[in-house]
Length: 168
Picture 1 (cartoon, rainbow, N blue to C red):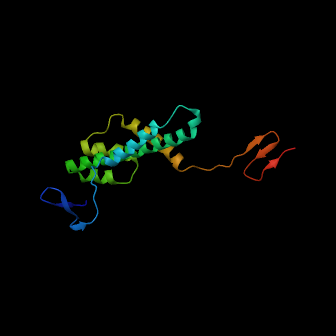
Picture 2 (picture 1 turned 120 degrees about the vertical axis):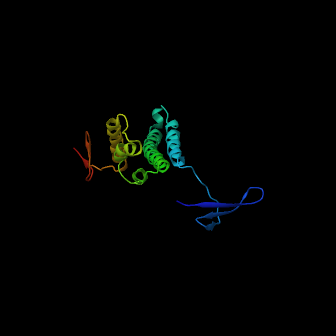
Picture 3 (picture 1 turned 180 degrees about the horizontal axis):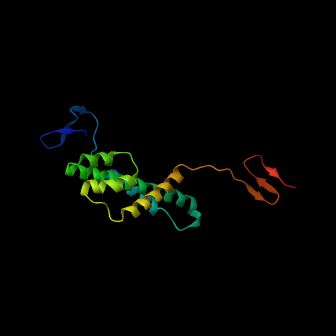
């Protein structure tokens, strides 16, 4: 974890910034751990609020809905990681910190982090994990689309994956 030190002027303003003992020549923005979580959910809400009931806005609504869905999932996972990282630090539980930082499926974290941090699992944990898996499977279908050949037939015209054929 980086360590910052500030030298101050007589009026309390910052005269010099050090990061891990080395002077920093640019400005520094320090954020609270939950800031990234807030950013994801703020983005989700903004996209949700931009959606309309108009059929004319179908493409824009699809864009905003997709962004809202993805940012909500990312925000949920970020919240879980940040929350349990902070709990692990507060309670001096290295195993909780390690699992919160580990790149593993969210269901594994939901199943193990509460038990490691508090000695008990979440209420309705199995239902929560099932729903999370459904949402992440949907996310995977969106992020990793599978192309499948298709064709379209209309009287007098067939369009397929090969050349266009006109029927007599």
